[in-house]
Image (cartoon, rainbow, N blue to C red; front, side, top):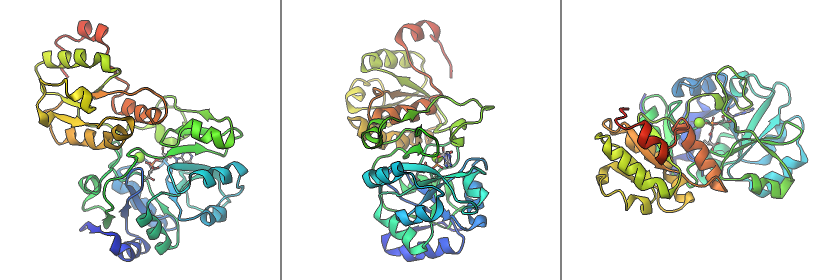
Length: 350
Ligand code: TXA
Ligand code: MG
């Protein structure tokens, strides 16, 4: 199958492909999604196939307006209305209990709830309106790989497997939406994103966090949490503080193998021993770093000689919570520590 690149002027064509049961990747303000008509079971099945996604991992329903949510949920909590007013369109996905027989098991993974999101991207809102039905949309990457923040990332992973990609340039936030479960008495954040716990609590009062690491045999609240995520080919090692950066660079240099550095311009300025081709800039703030993280991980995947990536950590506050959540997953929680590593891993081969 030839994968077409649609521009904003070709939204009717992209909507027609969706209506015909084809897959079309779409832009959002977070990452690119892999779209299918949520009411067409055969089309939704193709999403799992194209991504290689485990079938028990439910999909987010992307809607153009609140009416689509009202039509599908059994009980529309007041808290949902308040949050929708404050954050939609935007990076907050809300899980609510469905009316019976609304969406197929293929969409919900067999759960009685579903996740709803109203993305802040004009082209995609127009696409959903043109189709006239919600579209499912997991991130448009091969399962396990970093999420796509550019149309070319989608093309790299899914060319030949999907009908097209609606290209609207780079995404803004760069990390997937906050997922908030409203089906329980106290709302719970299942995945941190750009809408923070404090942002939500300012609107609806106290909520909980549930971002613990889920073991393979445990039944997780968000099924997606148990799978390997954001993993590039190289081992990612997090350098937790700017103070440790020089020590990490010295340690990696002493291993005599090429390595990549994913860091802010300030830290890259210290990396004089690393060629420009093995450096990827995260800009200079946690906002620019979040936007660039997945592109940086993908950049090093194109360089097979790179087996290790030193990546800069940020404090776990504000957007830093979501940034570190994704970075820790990509690193399998591996942190550089000056005192331990210089002793433990001299002559480490990776
Ligand atoms: O920013 C985003 O949310 C992007 C863009 C494309 O909208 N989408 C995205 O989808 O990240 P995906 O499928 O990669 O991640 C959705 C997460 C998964 O961890 C999934 O398990 C969880 O949300 N999820 C979906 N429906 C759920 C439900 N009913 N209950 C619990 N977790 C659910
Ligand atoms: Mg994903």
